Amino acid sequence: MFEKLKRKYLKRQIDENLKGRDLTLRNSSLKRLGFLVDENILLDIETLYDFSKELQIHRKDVKIYSFREVKKKLPTLVQNQINNKDFTWRGDIDNQNATEFLDIPFDVLIGFYSGKNEFLDVMVSKSKAKFKVGFKGGDERLYDLLMDIDPNNIEGFKLELIKYLTILNKIN
Image 1 (tube, one colour):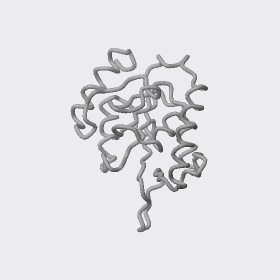
Image 2: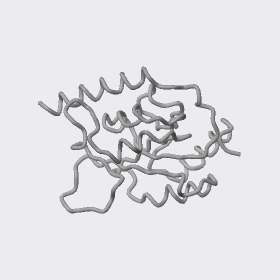
Image 3: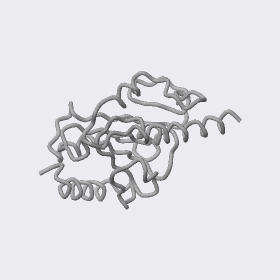
């Protein structure tokens, strides 16, 4: 029952966050890049750092935050990770690192997950990112660009993203 209530409040959080989104800086060029990653889709985070080199972005200007539906029982050194237990029953994020990540004004934030995921959708909606990229099947209200490609196809994703960022004058 609490899970159903939590998901209802998550949806309400998304609606509230979308009302306050500032779209005035949407066309800025790419200098800071953020990724919100579902660990069920991509386990090798280093691939995204390598991709940022192709975009000519320094590693210090790339931040990656991952989501895991259920927390592992084993201790982990991963700091930039959130799970469903880090959300209160009212849909608020109870993770200081995640809150700091969402306050960074990324030039581009990529929601690296397919379909709808209420937890990641709330994070995308709370993010202060100027331009947001997602995958087909995601909530269209959250993103400025939805790509019709399978997130598991990393090479295809890279080519498509570079193509669109070039067309939008975010990269040269």
